[in-house]
Amino acid sequence: METRELIIIGGGPAGYVAAIRAARLGGKVTLIEEDRLGGTCLNHGCIPSKSLLHSVELYESIKNAGQYGITTTGVSIDLAKMMARKSTVISTLVSGVQGLLKGNGVEVINGRARLLPSMQVEITDGQGQKQVLQAQKIIIATGARPITLPIPGADSPRGVISAEDVLDLERVPESLLMIGGGVIGVEMATILAKLGSKVTIVEMLPHILPLEDVEVTAVVSKALKEDGVEIYESAKVSAIEDAAGGKAVTVVTGEGEKTLVAEVVAIGVGYRPNLDGLGLEEAGVAVEKGAIKVNESMATSVPDIYAAGDAVGGMMLAYVAMEEGVVAAENVLGKDTTIDYQVVPRCVFTLPELAGVGLTEADARAQEYQVQIGKFPFAANGMAIIKGERRGLVKIVTDQKYGQILGVHIVGPQATELIAEATLAMKLDVTPQEIIATIHSHPSLSEAFREAALDVSGETIHFLPSKR
Image (cartoon, rainbow, N blue to C red; front, side, top):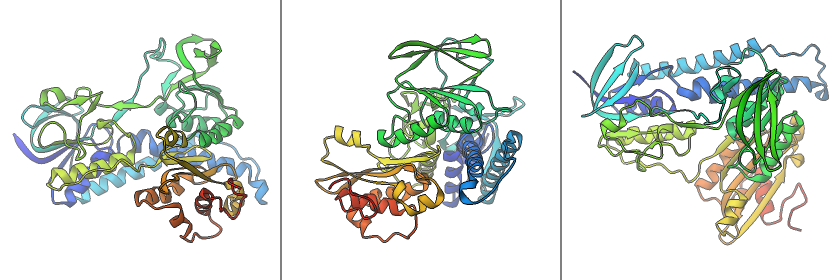
């Protein structure tokens, strides 16, 4: 039996980043991936969805080019070309990952891995051939897969798809009902609505994007409705049945049951750790609430076995998985590194974009902070006006007693980029006064962040302060 120093199971964001980091620390790494390198993020999630979102944003901009003095005619959607470009983007990035792994001397084996007792790993290739390797150390990074729902009719082979399947549609459906108003659901709804589909979102919780500040999600909700999206909140799907023209969906709302008909039903309620058939029990690896149990060093219950990414649950975000992969790789090779989840940005690539970090206003009040708010609307920002996207605002939630920034919430142009400054500010315990003392370029979208900091104490310059 051949021995490997470090075997990493899974080639998604956590796995391939762990492999590269471990290799650069001098480790001899073997990476096992069942499908394509890059995992869900590169192949079925983050990258393809953002590629399509960029396409529809560009389409929207061209349609509205007249207001910028640009005349256009014959603007239309070519879905096949849009999908082809998406595939090219994916292939480019996957090839990049392959090149990085090869360049760092990582051995890549294609196959499905299963843990055996005594630090052994069984690998089954696409032809059913098996081999067993002895590992000195292991990192599990098997990612996650879409959650299925125990709803009658949800497993129908016709007319019911996952949110991932939306990214591979060969034509735009006339109508689509999205079960789930979280990040996945609203991003898919944005794409399809911009492409001309009649979209309905059904969200079980009181508002879409339930983890975000209500004031900023209201802007996204309004934008979706302006695109013709119908939104049912505090509602639950109880059954899906065949109907003329597609599917009849029974939705339970506060006003009673409704039957909605759509050509296609998509399920976008999130992901769960992908642990089936991994052999965790046989290997003695503890599982808690459907995820691999790890400590702050990403160590599992078994010495020399670590885990990272969606397989450990928690914040199922690609960039969190990457950081967890780095921490696991460093610790498996003898370092003492921990991960800090206190300041993690959250990004939603709707149109307009939404991003947040830290506590929402409601959460801060529930935790009995002496909350003080600063806001600045993009309607008063020069660059936002130039770009023709005046919707949204920057909102800073602070603790009046100590001046600590508790959370920042942005909805508007390039919010997913602007949140980086807020994240760094919170990581370094920067106060609003220190943000104010930092000169921001003009005209820029980032000025809105400084103006919101000014508004915390009622001193904003380019808008009437909220505390007069």
